[in-house]
Image (cartoon, rainbow, N blue to C red; front, side):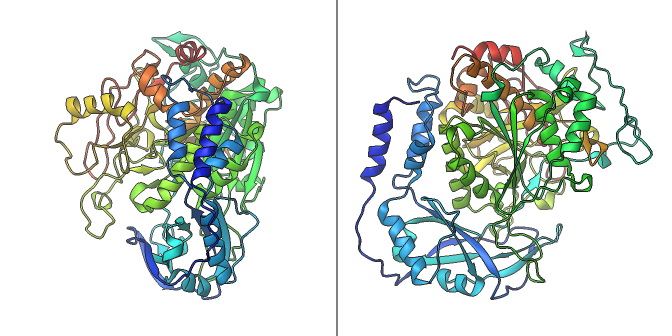
Length: 618
């Protein structure tokens, strides 16, 4: 923790901005708060039902914007005297807090419309549920039903909204209005893998029976004999990255969390079957996970309800980290939600829901690592929304949490060149960055395949291409400057000029195997590839590093990007990936993997023992 002087400094700094004037706002003039262009793929279908209840999350401005980021820059910088002095829940909430005046102005505005706060509101984020006709009056907005052409998802949204002048200055954004989510999992199931891959034995119902897998730890040509690139088991991954002989020493004090969106369901029977065959010692030890439901999510444990993303995440993490505590956070939509002909699918905005929950957890309940295997095209996320979410990721980092996100499965964009255009109405060619990987306060993870050597995943072999690139919303932090500038100078030049922002936050930061993981889904085997596989893998390795530090009464690593770029990158702690590229957007080869850091695999894949030796004494 920061010393008491430091804590007092931040608290006093926030208090200085807490203006307590009691004058009531006039609510007289409208200010355009946000305007967006309907993203590609979404089509307006009809005017929304006036009586439909929609959730609105009103994010209040911090009394002192930037304080969270400023504090995190100290606690995450290995050159700073406050390095790894994480803050408590109360300290961080105080930094997030709006001014007293902001809270009063927004409350008065809501009361003037006879709108009351939901019990899940916090001091810095108000949640309300209102019928569409009332939202129209409050926000001077036209709400309609929009449908996505590919997924048939329907949501109630508006393309712009306004606020009274006296209210606008106190609000960062209103969620549930302009965010047309393209949220998707970063994985591909077995149906895209060639049919000649021999799968393990199943019974007459397709359920897993006794499996014979090579559990040998012998190494040949630098590759463990347990490894087969066409069918990758957990034992292979632990052998290859050097964690097989590490035994967690502080499992009861170490905690890793997994985000679950889009109705993904983690199944206990699937985990049991996976462990029985791939981690028998954990199976004998009754390894499990905590299933946490948020905002109307359900926990359906029938095998028919089991889904691939959740299975991949949970099985990878538990297979690596047992007996460390694992929590799966299943995030549903904001209630109330009733399916009808107007809105048959949930209007879910998952990031804020999950982050608001985690920020409110007591210190001993908060995971020290969080793995997220989902992403949006950055340009489809309203910038104000993305910045608010990113600030909350920074707040988690300030509490000592390392947040990982998958870099994407489509290289620099989609398969079709026509998908790679701006959504500002001009349809200019562009590479598509992935959020939240573009947030500077998460650690982005790319994916590799093969073992001798590892290379960037390819569409032909893995079904996915590891994503990477540069943000158009967030600037690059100074600790990235040297390696990113070197890459752009040595390998990129003027190629793809205008298709990306060379000054933006560059990602991914690291990489790991993400091809053909053998996973149990619904009692059957699937081979799954994606940065959804590499992300929980890398998150698990950092969880083991935290375990070793906690066993010595040391702080968790928290936000690790400054450490990566200042100390660990180029230190021999990673396998440098130099083969492959982030192809996409039609026939573009995209960014190339290269010596040192690159925007496809970051610094490369982890060498656990080397990392452990380097971080244990920090």
